[in-house]
Length: 319
Image 1 (cartoon, one colour):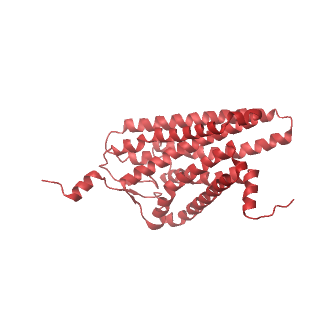
Image 2 (cartoon, rainbow, N blue to C red):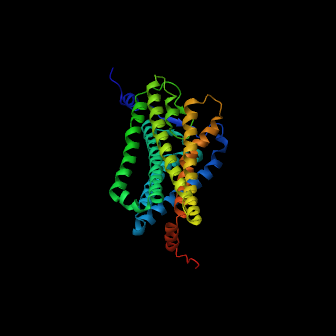
Image 3 (spheres, rainbow, N blue to C red):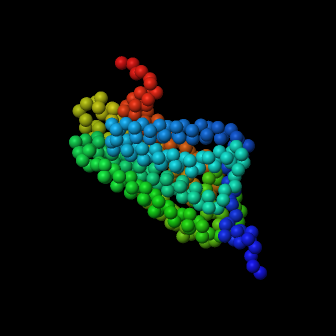
């Protein structure tokens, strides 16, 4: 018996998944969407403003600002990969997501999370060179090297996380297709498979652990050397200024890594000890809060960008 077109379509394209949003807080979805939407709009507005200011002002075409523009692009993609669909779930109840769209969302979220981590490391390295070896800053971080570093961060995220959707695409889903999450998180989807997933989980665990641990190690080393250099500065004022800049950067980095690591470990090793809605709320945090904070911390607190934005708004600064 020949398969009918509808049967053939069902065979080729697996049934869609259903994202439930935040399990246990369904009655609050409409209200929870308001702060989520506000943060998302702030992230889009802030990062687009940063990109526009850096692009239009040649004086900002320096290593720190070029890395910042790469981080802003990453923030836009990372937050946009999840938030529009999340808001559709909260406000419209549109939880169904096609199998292919789920795999694409999974790839963008995880690969761009790795890129965000990589650009944090690149910016930490830039600050290290600028503070610890200022006379060689422009010769070390040339335009060519900035392009190489940015390309390496991009390539790393794509290469190491491209296997994720392919590995998940090979799995058989004969259990529930309801994902107890607000987006297609890798482990949340893999847990629904009825096939053997040890190799898939091991690959994801290894890649995420290596990238995260390596970046955190070198970021910590960079800021440790920066702090040592600051303590040796003869001018207290210069030291406090550098410390204030680094302190704000470290706060953003801590928010990103703390929430990302919590989400990573909870999905893989938690056995019900943490309420599921708490886990999902924190998982959403690292997709929303860093992209919202980055333009404020790296932009508003940076004198050149702040002055450029104020000039663009035709605000007259007091003398």
